[in-house]
Every structure is written in C-alpha cells, then in structure tokens.
Image (cartoon, one colour):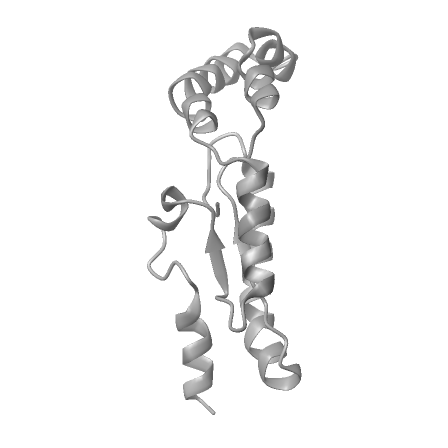
Length: 139
C-alpha cells in the first residue's frame, strides 16, 4: 500500500519513488512497445508466525535498542495503537500471489492494483487508468 507511515521514512520514500517511476514509464512503454506496466500495492503481508514475532515484546525491545526514550515511547505507542492492529488486518501471501496471477493473466491490466479496500480508499483513482487515458488523449 502506498502510504506514508511514522517511523517508516525510507520504506515510504522507496515506495513513492517506484510508483513515480512506474507512472512515468507506463505510457512510454505502452505506446512504443505495447508493454503494460502494473503496480501491485499490497497492504501488510504476513504469515501468522510473522505477526506473532512482530507482536512480541522481545521483538519490539530489540527493534528499539539504542533509541532514546522519547522516540522509543512514541514508536511503542504508535505500534500498539496503529501498526500492530493493522498487521492483524493484513493479507496473506496466497492472496497476493492470486492477485499477481490475475494481473499477469489480464489482457488489459490496470496500472495499479491494491490487495484490499484499505489501500484503495487513499487514492482518487485506485486503478491508475486515468494517467494512461490522459496520455492516450494527447495522441
């Protein structure tokens, strides 16, 4: 899911960069080579063992080792109230694999896909097709 999140600056920045690169390349590759670009934006993906590990106090203590007290308290509060519950509402690896298979099998795939409705609500155009239509109209 392409969304900013506290304590995930590098992760968020890399996702935004890949989205921008994909949006820039999509109309060029489609017109010049008939290559379709699709962005798959899964929400949190986790197996039960990963959720359990991330929810353990030992994991959190290890993650915050060496942090000052203020950022550690802020992170633990954020994790308890927001990030932890979001991980339990995540999708499974099998759901992501099924969506990926659907994308690859599509004759005319969207530019963007999300694994669940939580990811799509943050977007004005969840499919990304308006970008492609804009460039097609310019031809």
